[in-house]
Length: 75
Image 1: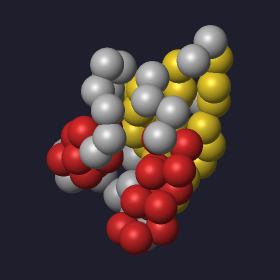
Image 2 (image 1 turned 60 degrees about the horizontal axis):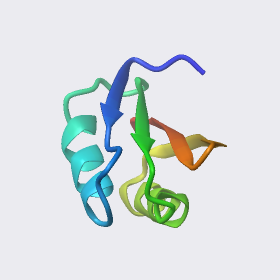
Image 3 (image 1 turned 180 degrees about the horizontal axis):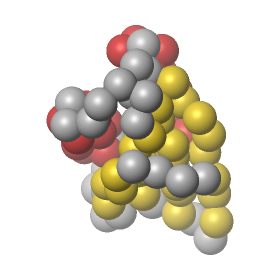
Image 4 (image 1 turned 60 degrees about the vertical axis):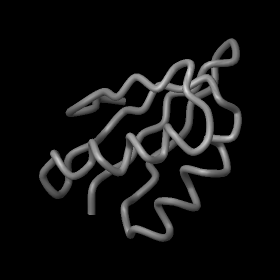
């Protein structure tokens, strides 16, 4: 999936990936996609909940070897 911006949250644990995502997404234009890289398994539950709360769209979560790529489209 093509992203307009990437946010590296590897090594960070809840709630920091969500906090950094909230800050970074403000820099994007509506409709742009943010790719979040993380290795905290909690992101699988936290990001969908955050997207539901904020109105941003979760496009998908890819998992490979304990690392996650999460794609969020700004509302």
